[in-house]
Image 1 (tube, rainbow, N blue to C red):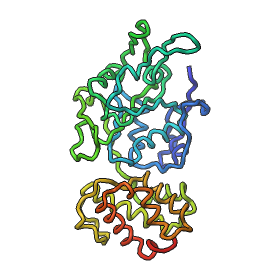
Image 2: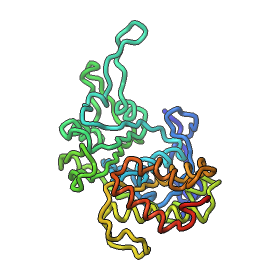
Image 3: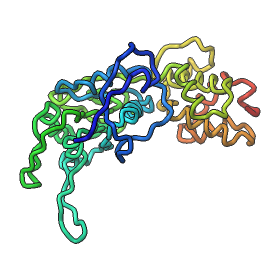
Image 4: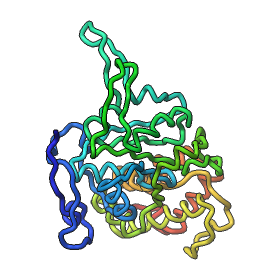
Length: 324
């Protein structure tokens, strides 16, 4: 049985928390399935995630929100600081429930049953992260219903093996929709999920970080980028996101309010990429524009590329065409 230990929430996550507030995690930080600790600014949703880890109460957890908002990274970095091993799977339209259970494989000349991520997580008390769960066939996902509620996992393919879920086993899913399908047309392949399956989930909406959180993240991940430029990149990112989400004018004073909605966004992931490339290409002509094109706009339609670059030029001013 893996050894557990208590973690002080304030110290583990670098957040303000009541004195003495703790959460149970694991003691083995060397476990190969514990995610590596990376710079991360904990924000929205941490309390909900910790409450779920303390006591799932027969629920799974679904994190939903726009692409690149940090849904999966939130769970990974919580797990990293609690030394909680993770079994992570990216779902797709051809995945079957049997893929999560495992199957027979030829190993050293013998055919043996190799347990899949669901079976291992349930047996060992790991987190099972199902990324892009709304891309998977809802009929296949129905196989998770009983195990989420604490029922034993029966693997018929392995002679009717019965796995009783470990008390620290948790099922966590991420998706760009909340299971009701994609009404925007931006996320190809998203499927409407079964209502009975969704009824087993707590739902946490994850949006993009606030500017100060992103500034702190850029400071940790791209320390060579001047703070003045980092702040302006974040303003650009939020203007692009506003148009992507179809929100009303923010009063930022750019010339893009009449440009209409965008079909791509400048996520936190892309923002970090833009910042890193800006530093990489700092000796090149127009490094901010060149970096933005590689980070995002090279895959945009011509009119959207023009619109995004115009936002950047408005916000960055002389920096846009000069050296940062």
